[in-house]
Amino acid sequence: MGTGQHILTRKTPSAMFLVMTIDDGGEDAVREALTGLSGIVTTVSSRVPEATLSAVVGIGSAAWDRLFSGPRPAELHPFIELTGEVHTAPSTPGDILLHIKSDRQDLAFEVGRLWTASLGDAVTTVDEVHGFRYFDMRDLIGFVDGTENPTGDDAVAAILVDAEDPDFAGGSYVAIQRYVTDFTSWNALPVPDQEAAIGRSKVENIEFDDDVKPTNSHIALNVIEDANGEELDIVRDNMPYGDIAGDREKGTLFIAYSKTPAITEQMLRNMFIGEPEGNHDRLLDFTTAVTGTQFFAPTTEFLDDPPPAPDTQIPQTPAATDTSDGSLGIGRLR
Image (cartoon, rainbow, N blue to C red; front, side, top):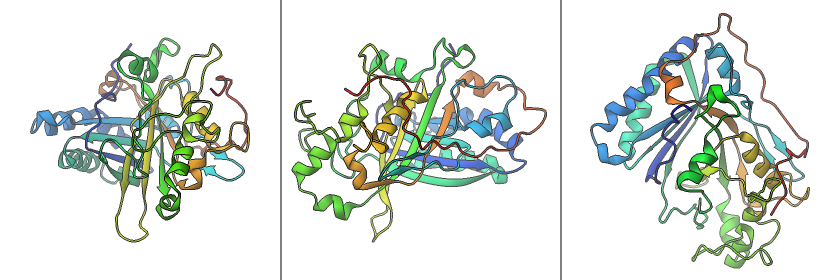
């Protein structure tokens, strides 16, 4: 197995998320920049080594075929759009993801600045989010986020591709969505109703018992199991973001690392389509997904020495859509 990128870190006070598309003819510059990213991180980190600076880069499905020859990650595909009775998870453009984390925002900014400078006009940034840790890792809606993340060896097992795809063992799949929250409506909701929407107490951060947790609560719809009853995990590294003034957008940047995109996709189906169908996530009545993209984060060995470029550039393919409620066969809702 190759060496995975530096995904599993403690929660740093700041993070930046840049989603870019590759402009026509920009493939060679992107290939060169991918190889140079680790050097930029090492250089900037050396100024403040205790700041836990790291950067993870992911590559989208269409971009993969424009950048590399040879095999591709077995499950890499565009983000699957989901259309439920009430809410939609859109699929939006994105060829490259850069996820930077640090104790210091200036260091994260410097890595982003230097790396995008190395790309020049080879890419267009379509979404840029500067996230921040909010108190004791709470979302802006006031609830602790990421409580259910696995830790230690369980976290490693949850995010790394293994022997099922030996050419890409050690890599990870990454899904991101940016949510814009309607805080006027959310804050008008009494706290007990907020807690019912999440499935967890707000102050104490204690999950409700299954016999009292609403079936349309966020937690109930995000807990899934395999056919043997084993809970399936992803690692979330969400961050709050936003502007304070007026009606400017603020909310949550959702980012999920996993060994297979199927787990995250099943969770999103439960949220947007509902489980059973129509029983959608109550939290979505107050927050709207405005982006959705899927990437693969290859190993450090792959980035340092990528396969040759394809002889013939392959045109971009449109994002996949899936408006059905077809199950992936992962298992049942707990």
